[in-house]
Length: 137
Image 1 (cartoon, rainbow, N blue to C red):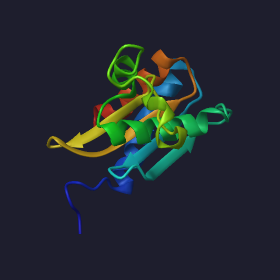
Image 2: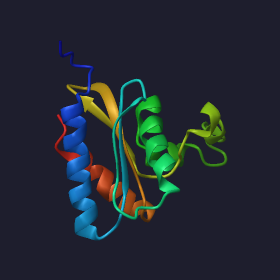
Image 3: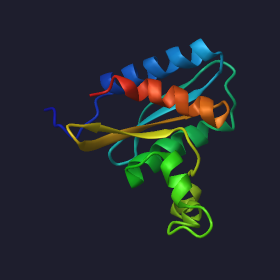
Image 4: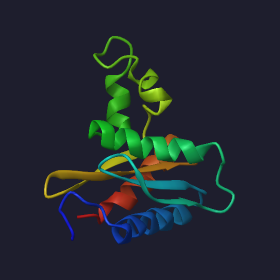
């Protein structure tokens, strides 16, 4: 049975596909992760020759975006010295990422998961993550 709070494998694969298309368009090899509302991995793709070190970063970006229901970019802004979330990246066994590339996924205003992308410059990661999330409803 399908529930509004669930993110299906089919939906996750489509998100990855859309993100991969953007990564190819901009010429960057990416790691693309999609997590469910519990932060569990639903789909993952490592494009040929994408950085090995970015595998866990992509997964952690998806986890972070769903865990805090905000983009990793926004969390990064709020976690700078002098801000209320300073030091948050040291929590959750080091799984918190505070730079762009993670975006929550919502359906009818309800959090259902997140996408995390890593492999390029942060601006490229964000561009690819946005492309993956763009058509999700």
